[in-house]
Amino acid sequence: MTVDRAVAPAALGRAVLLGRGAATLTAAGTGLRLAADPRPVLLAAGIVVASTVAGLAVLSRNPYVVRRPVAVLTLDGLAVLAVLAADPGIAYFCAAAGASALAGVVVGRLALLVGAAHAAAGYVVAAGVLRADPAHAEYVLAFPIACVLAAAGAAVATAALRRHVELSVRVVASAQRAAAAGERARLARELHDSVAKTLRGVSFAALALPQSLRRHPDLAERLAGTVSAGAAAAAREARDLLDGLRSDEPDRDFRAVLADLCRAADLPVRLDAAPADPPIAVRYELCRILQEALRNAERHAGARGVTVRLAERDGRLVLSVADDGRGFDVPADPAALRAGHHYGILGMAERARSAGGTLSVVATPGGGTTVTAAIPLRSPATAARP
Image 1: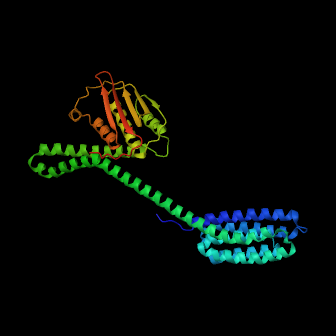
Image 2: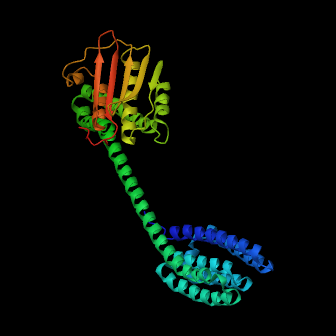
């Protein structure tokens, strides 16, 4: 991700124009009450307003104008000279200091030369002011040096803002790359654990078909059925995978996402969820665990209702899904679940482990089943799925 180097100067340029306009108008307003003839002060104020509006309009429509420093500084210098011609007083000093700051935004450290030029011109103007009214020499002589200070300050601020923008962009780009890599890894894992395995079995059956057709027609018929069933299973797994990827919307409240999943079930589901904002990977795995638990309650448990709870306990996000179905005997060895064709529970346990957590199943025949996933909130999903 590249950084547009016109962003920082354009933003600070607008700020300088607004600040200079406000300061100059304030100074002109003060001079308006003290001047015997208000027309020069009003003319200077009008020039400041016109130049500020024009500068803001140009920067808003084309921020890249900051890449043309000669044109910018020339036009701004003409505006300052116009203010000087209208009212060679405090309004001019404010305008000159603002011009020096704008130079610092546009050309960086070279603005010290511009600031020095404005300061030199300011001392010439100050000499004329002092000849007319020597009572405020300490104030008038201090104004020109503000041009050099404004140029240096704006140059430093622009460089700092540019570095901040570049660092922020790099951090965001790194986060985006990490998120994209995580999503790719997760999708690859999902495909490997479901669709790829099924398609591999279909491929083996299809390879054996030609020879079986000639020698063992009955076996060929069974293999053809295997291929057909495998293709249907792969399509179903791909559809489930896509539904799972779409089930979570990271920008939405997690409780709202869980509520949508519960409403999509074909049996009554009561949801009791505490506020939670888990990491994206954890959100995804919990959504898939909830989907699988609800699917098991619908298809295998014969449940009439399900209660889903989400709570935070001891730094862990705990999701429990309890149904009132027929239940089953939970073996002491989880590997025995595979023999009992409880693949959904094994898959949920793998998902919980992949998010750094654990899954527990409590069930009794005729007494329903409760599936509980507990995942740490403050640790990323670093565990690898087997």
